[in-house]
Amino acid sequence: MNIQCHRLFLAVALLLAAAFDHAHAQAPYRGTGVQHGGTVKGSVRLSSAPSGESFDRITKNEAVCGKRKPSPRLLTGAGSSVRFAVVWIDGIAQGKKCEPAGTAALTQRKCEYCPHVLVLRPNDELEIVNEDPILHNVHSYDMSKNLRSVFNIAQPVRGYHTHVRGESLSGISAMMTTCDAGHPWMSAYIIRASSPYCTLTDPDGRFQLCDVPPGTYTLKMWHEGVSARNSSGGPGTPPVVEEPYVESRQITVRPDETLSVDLVFSLRPAVASN
Image (cartoon, rainbow, N blue to C red; front, side):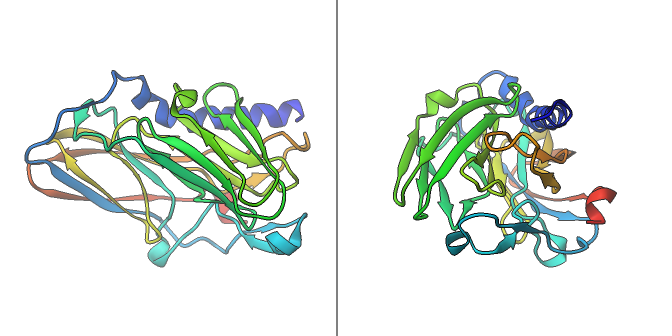
């Protein structure tokens, strides 16, 4: 990767991770139970419809991957709703009890990562599965540690499983995962939640956070950004990506009530004109 590309990617990576690091920097979350909790629900959408669908060009293994596929970086539905935005209550110290730790799956399917954005609950472990009959390489970068490589794993055949233990992800708030095996369009984001009050928007751009203790909080939304291009560094180097979109809203949750919040953001002009 040339120096200019590396600096640009690093700056964006730090901005991406900074959105989540504040919550992780707080005292550890305590699950104490909630009485008369409220609900925060709503949607994430664009201020205007995107100008057109973006496609990734397939350059290898077309028999498995296809010739082109929609870019997963911006998936919209009716009313310009946005899928795969992360919504969370920032810095919440205590509330409902966390569900028991489990295992979340990140699957390589038809040369895509499914899901494109994955939220790990506190203490969750990670299972990475190759469903394609070709070689994939799972390369994950810590977005807040100067792009430190967290793991770099070859998955050579269909059915290959890799288990990533939760303790090996300690101290990491956000990772970007790519494929170095000739599939540079493949990407996924893995977000490690610091509390149960973190979720993804569904295909209609909706989200819901339940059993929130009454109080005043900062609600945050993160979206990865849309533009991405391959770096000049070749295989094993992450793409150059646009700065993420982050929105914040001060909210007050009242006992036993439902608060509706719509989070709206605008694509940057350079993206909207693509």
